[in-house]
Amino acid sequence: MSKIELALDKAIASLPKLKNWVLGRLCALWKKTSPYLQLDKLKKLDFTTVKAFTLKYKWRILLVLIILYAGSKTYDYFFPAGKKAGGPQVITSVVAEKKDVPLIIEATGTIISNSIVDIRPMITNTVKTIHVKDGQEVKEGELLFTLDDRNDRANYEKLKALADDAQKQYLRAKELVEKNFISKAGLETSLANAKSAQAAARSAEVQLSFDSIRSPINGRAGIINVFPGSLVQASNVVTTSTNSTATSSVGSMVTITQLNPINVQFVIPEKDIPIILENKKDDAPLKVKVTIGDTGKNTYEGQVLVIDNQVDPLIAAVRVKAQIPNDKLEILPGQFARVSLNASNLKDVIAVPTQAIVIGPTGRLVYVVDKDDKVTAKPVKVPYEYMGTSVITGINSGDRIVVEGKQNLRTGSKVREAKAAKSEKSPADKTTTAEPK
Image 1 (cartoon, rainbow, N blue to C red):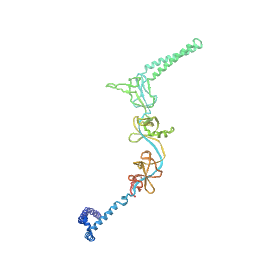
Image 2: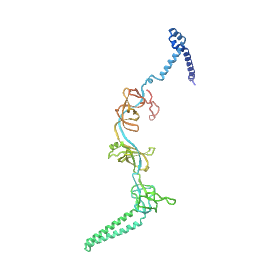
Image 3: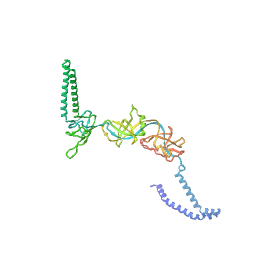
C-alpha cells in the first residue's frame, strides 16, 4: 500500500473524531454565548462589550467562519447552481418526417378447412371392402368403400336387358310401319316402351353406383368409422355400438378434409370496416400474414377471400375469411392463429415514436423543441398507432420532437440534447446513454 493510500485511510479514520471535536466546540461556544443572546441583555450590548467578546473568542469565531465557508463551497461543488436553479434538462429527440406507413389490423382467428366432406351412404347395405386407411391422402374420384352390390347389380342387368329388348322391338316396329304392316299408333307405343325401359335401366345403374363410394375432393381421410361387414344405412348418421365384444363409433363413415390450401377465419372490429372496404380492390386482394403457435416462427402469407356481408351485433365485428398455402400439411383445422391484415398504406403522414406522446388532462400532446432549445407543448391527434409508431396530426414535418426526458417539461423549459457515450464496442454493439454535455 502506498504512502498516499495510508494517508487517505488515516484522514478518513480521523473524520469522526474531527466531527465530534467540532460539535463539542460549537456546543461550548453556544453555552458561553447564550447568556448574551437573552433579550434583556441584548439591549445592554454596546461596542465595548462586543469588542471584548470578539477579542476573547476570536479564534473560535474564526474557526466557525472557516467551517461555514468550506461547507458553502462544498455544497456549490456537488450541487451546481445550474441544477439548483432548474438548468437545461437532458432530453432525446427526433425530427418528425413524412413517410408511408402500412395500415395493419391485427386479429385472432381459427384455422378452418377449405373444404370438408362427411362420407355417408346413400343406401342401406353392408360394407364389402374398405380401400383407404386412416389418415391417407386421397384424390378426387378415388374409390373409398365398396358395398355389397350383388342385388343391385342383378337388378341393373335385368332392367338393362329389358331396355335392350324394348329398343329392338321399337326398331322392328319402325320397319313394319314403313311396310304398312302396323299403324303409327303401334310405333309410338313401342317407342314409349323403349324409353321407359331405358329410364328404368339408368335408374338401376345409378342405384348400383351407390355401392361404390368415391372421394368428391382432394384431401386427407380421417379416422374410418366402419369395418368390413358393418351395416350402414341411408341416413344422416352412421351408428354402431361399443361394448366389451365390439368396437364401433357414431358419425360418418369417414371425413375427407382438404388441407392445401387451407383457410383462416377471423373477425375485425366494426370501426375498421370502412378502412378495409375503402382500400379493397377487386384486382388486388388484401394481404394477410398468419402466425401459428406461440413461437412466431411459423408464419404464412396469404390473401383475403371474402368479407362477410353483415356485422354481428353481439360482438360489433365482421367475419373475414383468408386463404394461406399449406404445402407441408403442417396446419390442421381448429388451430389458433394470429392474423395481421395489411389494409393499405398511409401515404405522406407524419409518424413519430409512440413514447413521444404525452397524455395530459386536455388530451394528447407532444413537446416541440425550437431553435433556442426551448420546448412548446402542442396538442395532437393520433388516427393510427401500431408497433411503437404513431401517426399524428397537429405538427409540421421537420419539427424536433422530444422522445425521452419529457417527464418534468413545461412550455418554455430549456433543454439540451443527450449525446451518445463513447464506447470501445463495435458499431453493432454500441448503445446510446443520456449524459450532460
